[in-house]
Image 1 (cartoon, rainbow, N blue to C red):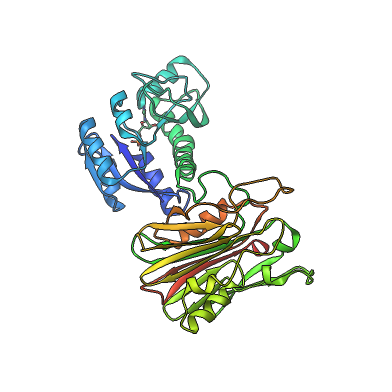
Image 2: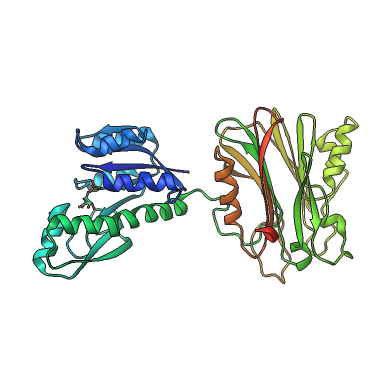
Amino acid sequence: MLKIAVLVSGGGTNLQALINAQENGILKSGRIVEVISSRSGVYALDRAENSGIPSAVCPNEASILDELRKCGAELVVLAGFMKILSPDFLEAVSVPVVNIHPSLIPSFCGKGYYGLKVHEEVIKSGVKITGATVHMVNESVDGGKILSQKAVEVRPHDTPETLQRRVMERAEWVILPRTVEKLCQELSPKIFPKPMHYPGRGIITGMTPSGRIMFAYFIMGRSASSRARVFERSGDDLLIRLTGSDKTLDSSLILYAPVRVMKDCAIVTNGDQTDTVYDALTAGRTFEEALMTREYEPDAPHYTPRISAILTPSGHTQSILKRDGKYFYSYAYTPGQGRLIHTYNHDVMSSEILPSFSGEPRRVIIPDEIDEFAPALWEEFDKDNKVSLYVRYYGAGLTSYEDKLYNKEEN
Ligand code: GAR
């Protein structure tokens, strides 16, 4: 979840709109971690306090920068912030800054146009339509990229105050939360930094920032038979069930237990090597010894790699068995970090041979909440190719857990 700092100078009704959006779920990909005011004694600070959000009064840019760094802000929202930020500040801040302005930019904006002044000028000019704009902040005042706008009518007997109220209610409080949510979604770190339509099958193992061990397993498919599958829980294990009618396929490649659990360890793989590892461990042999007896899948011409992982309380190991060799990668847990391995390396046309995953399992960010991680990952997958996703977050050690299961056929 993205960390948002909101900069204010006055009443804070736009701040309140963001707080409300956070409470009612419109703003779900980011959370306000701090409210920073350019002035003391303003009502926006009371609003922050009433909602339990930390706040600070920062009269100059140096202290704002300092506060932003301390709270780890990843997005800055100017909500009724009445100071013009200098180019030096904007360069130093290094995270995106957005502003809400109470007119339809490029009208009634720039130096001198702020707060009620904007509405006075709108009325004086005789225009019949005004509105609000959310835009990126750059070194030209109110001149950054426009993200959203909403129009509002100017009525014959409007005073600056009645017009301001209408613009706020009908435009500002509506577009600001929605635009901030959209930006948070765009800025949130992705599991796949470049769009990847077909990573194949994949395993993520790692630890949340608060020290909970976790793993995820997903399957994606391109053929009808590969797509006609669902995950099913079986006690603490995970199984795959065919939903299509084609039972003539090499079922060992598509029907297997992706997850099997033993005392103090969990095994996750993309094939029946889960059983090979399970049996070997039961007989006192190791994960590595078990997998050295296996090789890549016999699905010529792709020769899909077998990917596997084992999680124990002290660390996690991932493995890939490819045509060019058998590889093992062992890690101690790092809070907030996971490793991702998947079967294919990059997208190719359906007619081409799928290149195997190469290199070390990729580092990925693991958030604290399964409710944040699992839906975001499911959303990230190509909508045609995704088949199923299973995510498990353990409590202490490797005993109790919470999990999330997605099957395309059931969603
Ligand atoms: C709002 O109308 C906002 O758009 C405007 O000041 C008002 C603050 O209200 N901002 C600017 O004019 C910035 N150039 P609030 O403190 O109740 O959100």
